[in-house]
Every structure is written in C-alpha cells, then in structure tokens.
Amino acid sequence: MARQRSRRADPDVPLARYQSMRDFQHTPEPAGSPAPDPGPGQRRFVVQRHRARALHYDVRFEIDGVLVSWAVPKGPSLDPDVRRLAVHVEDHPVEYLDFEGVIPGGQYGGGDVIVWDTGTWEPNPGVDPAEELAGGTLHATVHGQKLQGRFVLFRTSREGSGGKEQWMMVHKRDDHTVAGWDAEDHPHSVLSGRTNDEVKDDPDRLWRSDLPADQASVALKVAVPDPVSEDELAALDELGQNGRWTVFGRTLRVTNLDKELFGARDDQPPVTKRDLIRYAAQVGPTLLPYLAGRALNMHRYPGGADTKGFWHKELPGHAPDWVPRWRNPDAGRGETQTYLVVDEAAALVWAANFGALEWHPWTSRTEQPRCPSYVLFDIDPGERTSWEEVLVLARLHRTALEHLGMRGRPKLTGRRGIQVWVPIAEGPGFDQTRAWAETVSRSVGTVVPELVSWKWSVQERRGLARLDYTQNAINKTLVAPYSPRPAPGAPVSAPIDWDDLDDPDLRPDGVTLREMPRRLAERGDLFADVLDHHQTLPDLH
Image 1 (cartoon, rainbow, N blue to C red):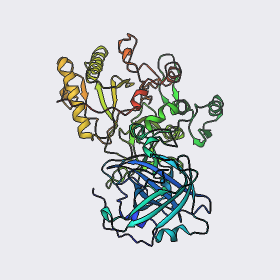
Image 2: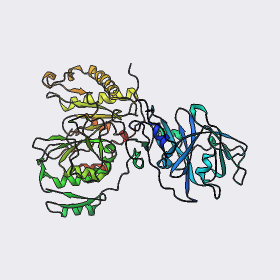
Image 3: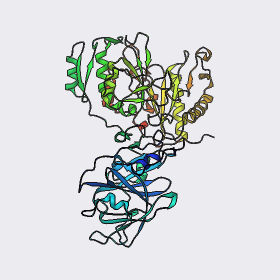
Image 4: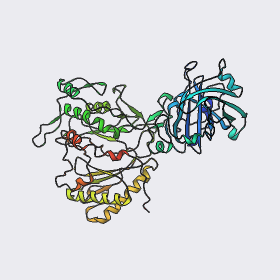
C-alpha cells in the first residue's frame, strides 16, 4: 500500500509533518508524541547511519521533546573547511534515539540503521534553540563519542529537492577540529560496534507502527532467562493440588497439579499436570527463541491426552495482564482476534497450566505475518509405511538439501513421522515457499515412487506416505520442537542430528517428557541451526 498523503501537516504541532508522511499501519516507525525536555545541559543528540534508497546520516537534536532532524548525505565532519549539505526533514519522536535495526523494504525509510554516534549537546548560552531554529540557524556544542565541539547548521534554501529546506552543517574551529576528518572512515555503531552490513544481516530490532511510540522498537531476539532453579522446582513439588508458584519472575496460579494428563508407558507412572508444568519450566529457556514473536496455536486437552482435544487460538479474557499477546489486524468476523505470544518463559508455563499439551507456533512473525521464516517439510507416514521407509524419505530430503546448499534440521514428530525445518531470510511469501517445498518434495518422491502418494485424502493414499508441503501457509503450523504430544508417556517432538537417521535405536516417539531435560543437558539444542535466518531460497528452475 502506498503511504498516505491525505493528512495535512500542521507546522505548529510537534511531529505533525513526521506523522503526515507515514501510513502507520504499514510503515514500521512509531508515530510518537512529544516527550518532556530533559532540561538545560541534558539535551540529547544522535547520528544514525541510514541506508535507505541512498546512504545518508540522520543528524537529530532533541529540542522541545522531539528530535529535530537533518539528512546529511556525506555525514558530519570535524574539518572546519568542509561544508556538508544537510536536508531538513521532519521531526522525529525521541524513541528514535537508540534505535538500531531494520525498517522493512518498500516502506518509507526502508533500510538498515545503526547508531553511529550519540551523546548530549548544548545550545549557545542564553539562546532558545527553537527560536534560533525558526530563524534558520542552529548552534550546538556536542559531546559525543565521535563528534565533539561546536557545530553550526544554517539554512541556505527553503525550496530544495522534494520541497525540503536545504541547510549546511559545519564544524567551527576549536580544540576538536581535525583536518580531513571523514565520517566514512568510522563506520561502526557506538552502541554495538557493528557495521550497517552486520546489522542488516542479523538485526536485533525492527520498527512497528501499530504500537505506541515507546513500544515501537520491537526486539527480534529474545532475552533467554536462566534455567529454572532446583529451589523453584522444589517449591512446585511442595504445592498441594492448587497453589501459587513463582517462576521466571512471575507468580502463577496453578491448579489440579496431581491430575493425570498422559497415561503410563513402559514401567513409568502416568504423567501429571505437575509434571507438564515442571517440564514447561525446564525447557522454557531453550524453547523460547522458537516461540517468541510468533502467534501460538494451543492444542488443549483439559481432560487429558486420552480424551478428545481441541484447538484453542483465542487468548482467553481471564489471562493475566502480563501474558504477551498479539492482536491480528487481518482477522475477520468470527476469526481469532488475539493470540498468545510466548515472549517470556513464564507464558509457556501459563499455557501448560491452561491445558495446552501441544504448542504450535506460526512460521511467520507477528510483525510480518505473511512472510514465513521457515520452509517446512512434513514426512507423514501412511498406514503401510514402515519406520525404515520414513528414514529413507528423511535421508533423501537430507541429500536434496545438501545438493541445493541449504541448511535444514530434522526432528522427530513424537508420533510416527519426521519433519524438516529450513530457515530462510525474510522475503518470500507463503505461495513461494509452498511451491519451493513442493518442487523439492516431488523430486524426492520420484526417487521412491512406491513409497509416496500425492493424494490428499487418507483413503486415496492407499497406506502410502505423504510429503506434505501444504503446511507452508499462513496460520498452518507444525508442532514446535520440544513440544509434548498427546500419547502415553508424553512423547515429545525431539530435534535430532542428521547422523541420528542411521541410529538403529531411533524411534519417532522415543524421547519423552521425562527424558528430554537430561537429553538437552547432554546433547544441547540440536535444533539451534534453524534460528539463523540468513539463507535465501535458490532457484529450482
């Protein structure tokens, strides 16, 4: 959608011009509201190196609660003999001060941003900078990590390119002047030490415009908490049927703790709700990066795994206020409006207490719900498919991905099959990822046509396996790694190494809820490779 131009900017209203240029439903930048001035001597400034349609430096001074801003194509200089063109752009909200990350392509300002320099600044003594600015000049003494000393910006033309005012930026002669000083010789962020390329390849944050300005800088990486402690687990064990348990900094009301949710298996006793909640806390820190920032479809079995379960997507109204959530702006009448988003480990424990035995995250993130970050391959065995035949199909997928130079990771379903997740960079839509997965799967199927059916219905498959590429669609999900499955003993969907496909003891439901914490301690997170989303889909034609 093109950015809106129907709103008129009122020059007497702070941020009016900024807000008039953006469609805040689609441009991930915060609309903002003026923030209180921090007072004399504490005004802040920031210079952001910004690669949008063209590289430039955004120079922003905090004045009267907003960031008065200029785009400086060649960047500031400490050389007083160098004059830099500075295009006066719209004021920005103060929330931009520490933003470093990406603005999605195709939107206003789309590109990558680093905090190239930041610090405080002072106007000339006794001068109101807002009044000085209105007269076409701004004097500033800056105290940054790269920029130091006295600068002056002065207007040269009110009607420059695109109707924006043209200014010049010059460093005054003082103790901080450096002849020949060029911003491009100092390309690293003062916050992270990274370059624009590094931030673009692995961004930590994204702007979202559908949130208030103080929430618009969205973390793309989750802060993983410390593992649950033995004392916290002991506190859970000491509770009666019901009680309150504090874990990951949250106090949760837990209920029916001794209720049997999964039947007995082998020589093990049944798995209780207390066991499930304990497990959610134990794997929560490992599982959090796979769930954070994604809507979660919960498969609930309040009566236990041997009863009929149902999908529960709408976050209930009785959920605590702290539970993270996402309101789907595209939801129609009768569709799920608000989803649980497990942005903190305690939210997974809450879901377990809510009776969610299975956890199914979307394959796209909430800020870009139509852009998947995985391609999924689901090897779904038929009634006649043996486990050895499932392994054959999995090995063929391994070979196909190796041939394409693509990185993917397998996991046991916890039932009868195997799934392969392939992480990808943001860009393709679900139509593209589904078509790509279909091409790969059909290539695998041509090698062993006697094992595979492409029929949709189970009856028409004649007991053969299905390579289900149709899961690559919005709001279609596969079970999360480490999620329990509703069967005796509480088997879990366990990540494996590709070499494990040759292990004669491997079974699709061979790892249970009771065994997984020890397995994680011994082998680590075998699925961690899928958290790296740098690879792009190669052309298969």
